[in-house]
Image (cartoon, rainbow, N blue to C red; front, side):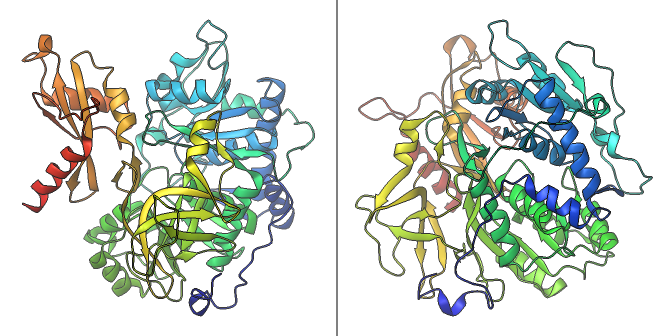
Length: 559
């Protein structure tokens, strides 16, 4: 911690965090030994104990090794909604000494193909309701693609009656699957295969979340067991979480924030996780009341929905002693409502897939509104001039660069992108975040703008180049430029400016393009607005001048 942060550092916490020299799977072994009969997961009133969790994850690992021929360091795709199966699959993959490749369940076949081929995964753990999206990638006849699918049915873990609102896709009964290479989850457990020795160490690769950027296709962020351990342990200590903390996990596990704070941290400490596969404000309120939830990680759009509707008012949420999140700033009026109702301040943080979640968090005892917070344990974060890499003064705008134990090793099989992402300053390797910020006189970081071209829709990062790449698959599209448009609920939403091929003018509508995009890409990145234009402005080198179009859109908002 710097001298500037010292007066505001959380009381009683050291500046340095000593990390365990173990792999992340070992946390499951320790908690199963310490708290064998304590619930780790609660899923619509069905509980899974730490002992049961460890035993089932080991059987998954045995199947992956013996039947799917997964070897140490192999990448395994994990493509599901939040569920007991997601959590078991994650730790089953780690127990097999393999690498988790978490994928957003909103992704469609065309997007999934990139993750499969880029990661080299031959095995995937998937849900029944999304089987049709991934089935086309099972064996492409050229020796590439997926060879093994383990298919989960969420309703297998609805073992107790519940009065909670269970979505149809969770209630759905198991369907018969007969295709070669496809094994139902229940059959995997029934095989009861034991895994081989645990060999992965702290510096072996643990998880590889994908992130996009300015150049189209998503890139895999290579994280070791050590970098994963860093954020899961750091979050527990920063917020003083113990084995008796009860968490409501509504943030997606495929995203590093939900993964660190809602999955890995509680398993390490022996806490209980109440899981929701999809956001539902009434279900969330009932679960907080029923299970006396004390810790809730939530993004601003969820909290806006939660506090803006009277149907959650009858529920007792007084058990909450901490509400935190990030991704997008919490509107001041909503933060005020939360404080009025609970007496709690919303504690914001900042991180990226490249840093396995948080590098900055507000001190819980002294948070500032709409603020990224201060650098956490062992993080050297600076605001620098993007051109010269020299630090700027207090209150001046520059790019955030970070050095710390949670920073990724680099991008998977992409040395060029890795080189571009890092810079050496004073002998230290810093990650360039591409985010523009300022630091106030207390050392708190505040977001100002983005250096990189990106849209923030409900806390999800949308990279226009990736959306454009997918949209060019539509036969009617000659040119497209994707920009951010203002949206009351989402903050920003995705807008596509489209030049049609002459042969398709009058044959396709803007709504047709919206519907096609919705079908072929994840909902959060799919353009909600499409506008046909006769041409796109270009620079002398022929590049589309997206910034000019973005400025025109911004002028419409202010006008």
